[in-house]
Every structure is written in C-alpha cells, then in structure tokens.
Image (cartoon, rainbow, N blue to C red):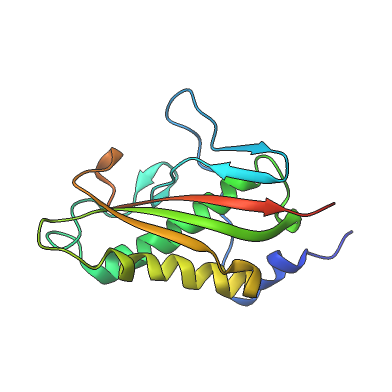
Length: 157
C-alpha cells in the first residue's frame, strides 16, 4: 500500500475529504488537460448533485454562507482535476476564477472568494497561491450562489 500523497495528507490534517468528482450536467468535461495544465469547468457548491444553498448573495444568502459555498466549490473543482490526473501530480494552483451571484448592492465578491483561496493555500501551501478573478453575476445555473474554475499546473508522476 502506498502512503497518501502529500496533498491528501494535508486534506486529512484539515479534516477534509475530497468529494467524488461532480458529473457534468451536459456535454462537457469536468476538467480537460492540455500539456501540463488542467482547466476545470465551473463547479458550483453541490453535494450529490444538489446545491447546498441557493439565491443571491446579499439578499437571501449571507457572505458567510457564500464563503462556505466557495470552499465547497474549490473542493469540487479539485475533485474534477482528479478525473484527468491524480491529486499528487498537482504542482501548483495557477488561477482561480470565481463567479458570485450577487444582489445589486452586494460588492464583497472578493471576500466570498477569499475562503476558496485560503483553503487552497491551506492544502497546497505556497503552491496554492494563485492569480484570481472575482466576478459578480446576476444568476448562476441551478440558482447556485458561487461557481469556481481552476487552472492547475501538473508536475511529473
């Protein structure tokens, strides 16, 4: 039996399990690899295909609820990466793009996405530091309040 990879060990230390990779809801891949990069599709905060919280942040959803959802989105996106490469091949997180379904007066999208960024740093250390975009939107599929995409650089086996 092989010891767990370093990233799996960090997940366990944090008390986290990587969820099963979410199945796509249409004709797209959860993640695609080209060369040494993996690009994920947008991943909402779902558990077993069901959104954990729905609605606009700043209206029906609090910043704290949305931040917790962003963490789940990041875990779901990491699970998607494992559909094309094992977790231990992740060399670094290159970019996070986050979409936040926001009420008109809500302007703290960066605060919501900070939760995902902090989680990635907790798991990957400095290899989890990344570029990021935080984008407000009026609606996301499944009435989700957050959706996250990752670009991940892979290392050798």
